[in-house]
Length: 135
Image (cartoon, rainbow, N blue to C red; front, side, top):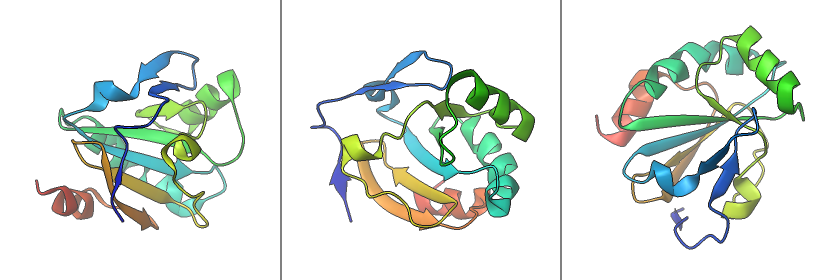
């Protein structure tokens, strides 16, 4: 499934800390939108891999909490779990026409042109994701 995100009306996302982020600022990068939950053991296992991927200048990781935790509580939870990548305050999926993942962890892979190219379920490794994006 390929879905272009360029025509979406809403391009402003909100981080867990309340700071606005412009979706268009991610153009030219691969974006991994990762859905996670505190109770999800595979989600916890992939955090170090996602943290490392997020350090690449070509890749941004955006985390979406599945537990409904918001604001300062979400920021605190992310810190306790060792999350270093950006956590979003709300799910961007509905604005982009994405269906709610039925399993966790789920990673939506968006190419540098803003097209959703794949949705992956289960824990992801840095090696597998780098093979997918061609690096």
